[in-house]
Length: 402
Ligand code: GLA
Image (spheres, rainbow, N blue to C red):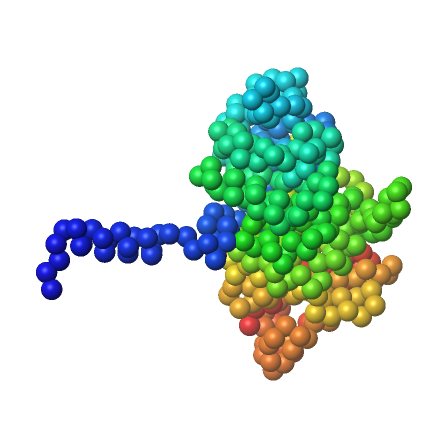
């Protein structure tokens, strides 16, 4: 068959369209192709709340670029609430001129110059949670401004949204970000109210599953208005049970930013916090003052073996596989077929915890190597099960490889 030039061009165009056009059925995550492993970075809120400024962000970026965090994988430096004060006469969002005198673009450039990425915060309602201007009705304009500034990550909150439908509101901003053409990770902070795990995959790259974390082991304290609750770390952990199947590359459950190093928990408790966030394939967003942390805290946040579990390319979220009062076992399947396992003791005194091979999907006659990810040493080869003594409020985290 002889093809003329016009026919060839038409066939070429059709083939190009098939190969390169994103399928809308795949949703935004496949289209923006970001966060193929859980995002890692730092956010200002847990430690600094509204006390943000360009000096703070620059010094945090300096610290992350030089203290080993960048090499460990931390990438996004995110300013949370309170950077914004008003809108200009054309409706564009205005940064606090006292706290950010050089402007957001200059600051984003600085963060980029340190080899890191830059993130901002806004809200789907009329006002942010701290009462600053929200993005409602300004979504496309705000997305355009973020793209012009060089924003790589947007955390989008849910205060003052009235009767808005969450899926609709988050989709509007998601589409606005896509329309800019700039790859921007979209972090949805809706606190789990409208079950974002059911619809979030086509909209954002991560979604909060609960209310805010606090720097405590456990709390469940009611808010002054009677609403629920100030959550400690284990209260948040418990609320992740059952959500595992909704996470995967490009779309993650977010149990909130980490409190490691903020002073409210012990070192073993912070180690447990980090172990669980890694096993849950949670975004690893540090929330402490990384400019002045102790070596012990730094060692927790940069443990390469534990981070490798979080960043495993298979993108499976780990799950609880055993509960026996205060003693639990959690496991995550890794790409090479091995398992990351947490032996967990919530109780007040030391106890032995055992994981059997059967529980993690191996035949009991199998001999497997066990590596302790906090002791950084091989525990040996075991057949059928592995047991360890676990101190109070602590974990033993191992990798089990046949
Ligand atoms: C909400 C969010 C927090 C933080 C604050 C800022 O509470 O859940 O993570 O962003 O707002 O005001």
